[in-house]
Image (tube, rainbow over all chains, first blue to last red; front, side, top):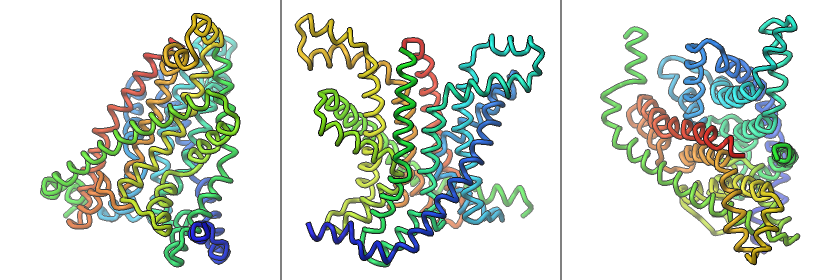
Length: 224
Length: 226
């Protein structure tokens, strides 16, 4: 038992590692508040384009969405970080992460929003247009708000996945929480820093997990 | 070399692609094996937990809810790192393959338990009462009446979740598993050319784009039954 505590919950080691764990946590938060808005804005754009009345536009961006949902995000990240420099395009770790997340995350948000826009009855658009609202205003003031409400659990759930996904930035040596925990583990030959990082992720994200469960139950009850 | 030639030489280098095609193909096979194993064990474990939860034993349910929340909140890569780099310090070591399989299984188990559980609770109480009144026992009711209806409702979200979690097999490359991304990265290192990475991306597209289509089809197919 004592060995177990020493190996996984070694307070002394965690205390020594805490400065770099804190800086990792900050970097993770910074990453999250960067990539979530970037992905969400791209997602709204893709959602609108894949709901376009123009068939060619709709089809081509549906293809784009499927393409970036089909490639695992880590593959995309490695491609941008390690592959593109061969073409003389060196984005650095931050650039690779932002571009990779933009392409991946916006595809997911876009697909969710497309389903949301589709779920708004056609009569809503017709009623809005007949009151004299322009097409743009109809979309922005009538359709999108209802669409977002209809797919809110999926949007929150996807946001949780994006924040969790920031941990893959450790693979391109971005000094976020997981990366710093691994560094500390290497330096101390002890797993406690990774356990500490896991606990930090859990404390940060558990409320979101609970929120999602409640939102999903609400939808289920409403459907009955 | 001008721009376009350089680009083709780097990313669509046929000589390099042909040379490393067998490696990527082996990686493809490993990815498929890993994904299938994760889906089978993850869904089986998730269903078992949901059934266990339906017995309504309070302390047990708290444990189940905590476990499930834990693995929904932790990033898969963090779980892989814990298993692969953390456990050996306690004298338990496992291969990168096992660590990746176990991590993704735990994650899929947790997400699918939530989905199965939502399905079970969505079956109306009258169904339970009617089945019990015909003389069926608790387990008989669960197995023959409730689960068939619950599972039908949960197929679309389960499919989508399973697809997105199997995409996590690429994380295995970080702990030395030679699945598609792993073998593409070693091939890139050997050949000093990123074309194997292009090949790897194509392999993932071949694997996952049909699955995304399948997920969308299933969603449309089962939607009106709810």
